[in-house]
Amino acid sequence: MQLAIEEANKARELNEVPIGAVIIYNDTVIATGRNYRETTQETLSHAELIAIKKANEVIGSWRLEECTLYVTLEPCPMCAGAIVQSRIKRVVFGAYDPKAGCAGSIMNLLEEDRFNHQVELTSGVKEEECSQLLTSFFRDLRKRKGK
Image (cartoon, rainbow, N blue to C red; front, side):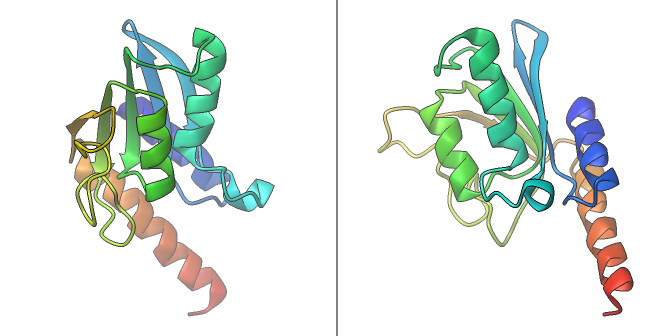
């Protein structure tokens, strides 16, 4: 999770929402990602999707069946869907997202038994640190905007 936090901090340096992701395969980091939505102005530039795309390239397959994804914030519906579709084995996340979280907060797409793949889930890892990254980012953003 510490590497995902480092990715989140790199996103923050770019004035992006500080979310970071790391994908591990055979105890080796094969991909990292951080939010780039503001930089690219692309909806799909979420940390998880960037890391998944890189991992696909490294593995040489769309199937990431033996991979673990670490991410600082509970995945949104779009990312949760991509995680299920990529067959990632396990997700570990830090902070809960009560407004968009689809790994237990609003719903749990990752463990939904009606899909043909379910993801092992570990939540709340370094939760306070991950949550603080987001809280301080948005507090500073409101100050800069004068709100």
